[in-house]
Length: 144
Image (tube, rainbow, N blue to C red):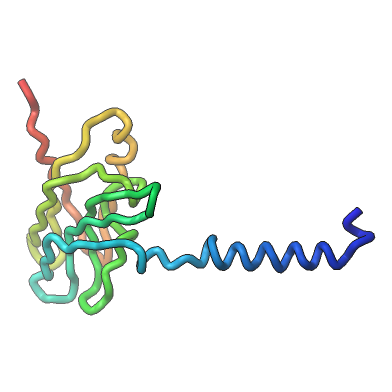
């Protein structure tokens, strides 16, 4: 019984904490991803930066995806804080273009993956951030 061996329980808790810190929630994934900035566009007043980027990482079970970030000028890009998609490490978007309409409106145009597995993923998009309305234009061509 565990109650008869209190030292074993304490050791188990310490071991669990070490494993969690080493291989679990404390891993710095930002340092292992390779991020390529494709396009950056500052807002007309220069307060915000929209960035189209690609990211790859994950080792043997790797990932490669494209997305868009919107952040305040001077703040580092966080590749997991994308505006497009439900799963931030899925690649469902290509040919991403950015255009500031004015200081409070950003247009993002892109082609999206239309396979059935991507339907739910592609429906999730951030509508606004920092008081900026984000307008999306899907540019897929309809085949006839």
